[in-house]
Amino acid sequence: MIQKYTEIHRFIFRLRYVVGREINKICVFLCVSVFFFSQAHAQEPFRVMHYNVENLFDCRHDSLKHDEEFLPQAVRAWTWKKYYDKVTKIAKVILAASDGQVPDLVGLCEVENTYCLDGLTKYSPLRDAAYRYVMTDSPDERGIDVALLYQPATFRLLDVQRIRIPSARIRRKPTRDLLHVSGRVISGDTLDVFVCHFPSRSGGVRQSEPHRLLVADVLRQAVDSVSSVRQHPYLIIMGDFNDYPSSRSVSEVLGAERVPDAGISPSGLYNLMAGKKGGTYRYRGEWGMLDQFIVSGTLLSPSSALRTGADKARPLAFPFLLEEDEQYGGDTPFRTYKGMRYHGGYSDHLPICLDITVRY
Image (cartoon, rainbow, N blue to C red; front, side):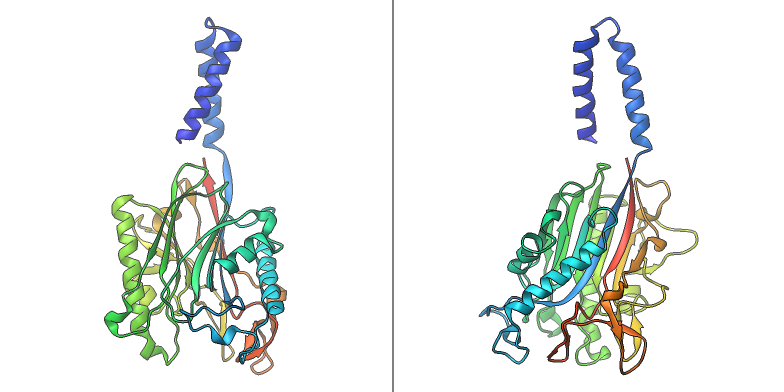
């Protein structure tokens, strides 16, 4: 909004110089009125994407991480050729999600380091998109992190917080940090974005659930902190939850409910993927919605400057991201690896996309 006022003042100054002081008041009144009228009805599309890219590792060993399996001499035989192919494929997916322009925000899971993100944003087919990025540096033993790519022209970075999970409290191994990014959009409003990757289901759902419940609790506290600073904030949570919309971590601890037909609370959290058919991950022939968008109720209000809805969120099931499931039938994600065997695909997850209307 400050920028808009500055533009008006500059316009008024030029107008005074040209038309003189005698008719200044009338012209200024008319021009400012037209300016505000046009701005009040202008809208811009704002696209958000999230993608678990399935182990984007470079081929160098990090002595502080257990990344040995992603080395050329290791069992996976991960080579630079395969790495470059992987980066190119991720860029292809992001570009395919474009509708005249690339997504304004892209959340990523399972990225090893900034080298990989530099490779994606500067040296792949995505380089002309001019993305910038922020990411976590977590104590996760495998060395995978979450990141957010953003378009600086449509999302002006304000603040970045990396939130550590106290895994030792429940005697668990360290997991990924939560990434909280605040930025200003074209309307002048602040958008808060959380990118998360909850602990896996390795070892069994019940045995691993306490770790996801802990992360959900930490995330809920972070959301409440934002709400205490900005009343009724515009807020998006996206990521791979390794749980479903109906799971305890999401529905009970985080408190994200399905979008109702009426009675939306500005302070509530709503899961835009709840109740949708299909999913983003397939296990033993069954699709599950592990990757989700959760938004604050403010984003669902018809009168809000930033507005979206459950119908604006969806998995991106591009044909090239799928292949035939030879064991169970139907389609399944075209993975990079099947077990330890290189398969040459994109990811074991499908990306998800959310469209927001920004009114200014």
